[in-house]
Image 1: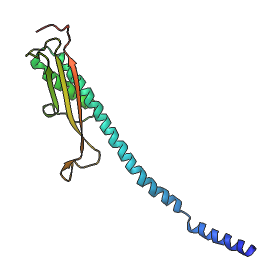
Image 2 (image 1 turned 120 degrees about the vertical axis):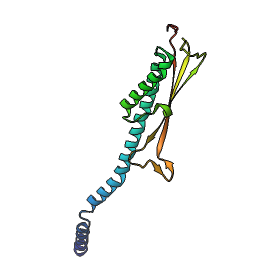
Image 3 (image 1 turned 30 degrees about the horizontal axis):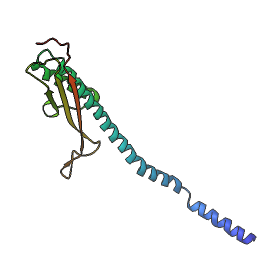
Image 4 (image 1 turned 135 degrees about the horizontal axis):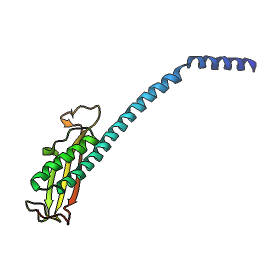
Length: 160
């Protein structure tokens, strides 16, 4: 019995010495393999969520600026300025009013803004994912976000 016990204890001691240090290596490899993709996914989600909030805020501010303009000729310029400022505050990125901002009117919609008209502001903006090229195999590596906001011209607004 003692001979088997001594042999078994020597055998277990030899295995423990052979395995020394492998746990640290396994932990580091698994941590890198699991944490790097997890951190990337978190960064991508945060970028898209921030851009979605910025687009919604820009659409709302553009609608408010449009209906508060004194003349309809100034309305689009004010809406563009408000949307650009809101986008820069929220995302820090560039905003192109000509291609990304669309303003339509539903209702009577004459050349002047009349009380009760509904103005619809739509913004469409691609959001690129972090650390990816702008194009992969000819396809854009971006997520397209859209936002729409309806603003009603105030009923108590003076007719112009």
